[in-house]
Length: 310
Image (cartoon, rainbow, N blue to C red; front, top):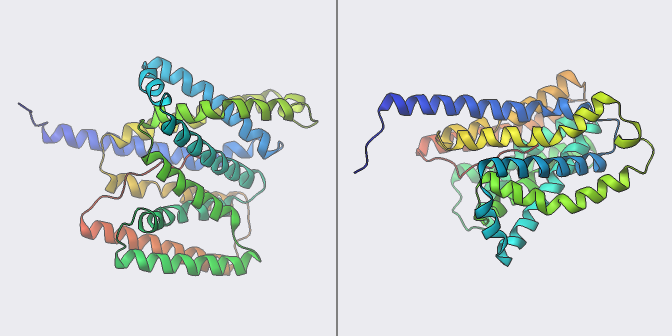
């Protein structure tokens, strides 16, 4: 016979989950500053280091948790192998685009990408999963299209970094739905798939002048080797939060990441923000407010959120 948990115990678990979730998303947002410390090195080399060190950290974490069995079982299935490879490739493009943007002073554009990502996810729900779009969602799609047009005019070209980030992240979320593994085991499988190519990238890059191996000082070595930890820590925190709080609370917390990135790019890194770009961002913000208000009004939680692994 099931025993109901006391209301105060549930409230305490939710409060703790909100704190942990807030901390996870805040860490993800401020990782931009971390990557700025490695801006002297090429983005491709940095993504190699991140993939390689993340694989080591995730393998160690999976060992400590004693969670290899479901991963080994899943890897024996050819379909799951293919889905893991697809997810790993999407994650690589997302990570690589993000790191390239940060080291090339395009932080504000990464913020735009992660603002658009929830809207792109809704688009996949309608176009791929044949979910029914609400009036608010259709309004959001129109606003997002207007934003892309305005920002294309402002930049003089499509905001391709933002569009790549949004597209790869929403498609990554779709691929994760089809992998029968939890977030930690799933990311372990994805990083192990990437381990070989990552090692090759690091080895080839290390032969060039200006690489981490050839020119990094002690602090830069610490930052390069720590990229696996900064990938794993907020992910584990997110997984903990997701188990204890409703997605109606967890979903809006996800917006902390682009809000922080926008603030860092504009206020700390002095990236240009002309009036036309503010107008473009405003269309995206209006779309997000419309969607979130609609969700609250209908009393339904959003689809399970995938963390903005940056």
